[in-house]
Amino acid sequence: MWNTEFGGFEPVPGGIVDGVVKNIRRRKGLKEQIPRRDDYLA
Figure: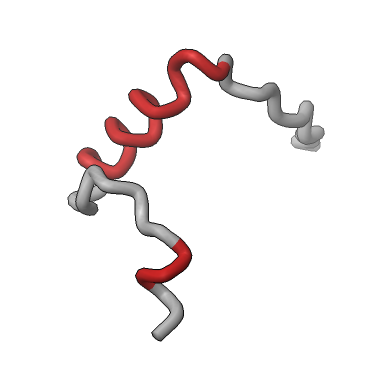
């Protein structure tokens, strides 16, 4: 029988957050610029 258990998340160090987010957005074909709140609210 197979069993897995979620081990949790660990925070990304603050100095590399922007680079990690931009790489993920680029990989997914999204704009590298992180949307602002105003982009969603008219």
